[in-house]
Length: 342
Image (tube, rainbow, N blue to C red; front, side):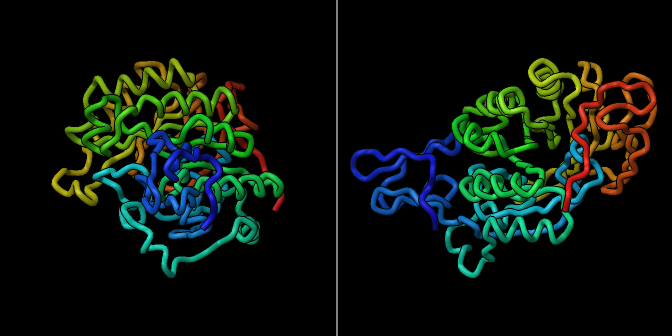
């Protein structure tokens, strides 16, 4: 348990959290929406500091990040709890939880996490599997250490962090892989019980433009919910106008999970239509996800048409990349590359 960095003490021993956009006002003895921050006698504590639910060595492509250190391994960590309650969550066992789940969980200090990442010859560390802002203070301490040890850092996030929390971790975060789940008030309300979702977009823009983070956007395309032309075109147009045409957009296949077992998997044709929308709007890199072997997993140079990176699932074959550019024509591919010492 650790006192939270970003909060405000209020009269009556209440506390106002400033880590995510819920900005919960929490009474004494009560929990925030995420159920991992508790007010104890007017002091706000993170209950899950260094408490790990999931740990793995992953290919970076699994996040998915396709234009960030392709082919590298990343040390991946998750904790308990979430500030969203998505009906289709594939990790609901760790996200839809309460403090009782912390009993007997594995504790990994920031120092141990960095040591484990280097021992496993990972090039970076990612906070993933559940919303990383839920253990913001832990990720901040870990990210600072990671930079000292020449490891890249990744947030795999729903984007609901506050601007001030982003600015606090911004100097230490390299990549921001964000879900833009849909593009309407109704969708976010129905799927995740969230309002004010446009604040997500503003923070994504801030991550890229103020802090120079590498950004990739993921939309899990769910039949009957966000597969309409208006939402998909809205997301693609926002990416083009606010993040730039070279920003990757992953349109991924939904599979029935948790409270949405009544829906079928996304038809491949729907994903291909979403891909076509992105390309029509002007995005240079649109990827079809959760369909191993689909040709839209590959990176193709938009300028000369040559194959740059071939992918089948998480297997990556880099054939046409030179630094961040096309080896054949020199076009900028918006790639972050490089080897880091172990």
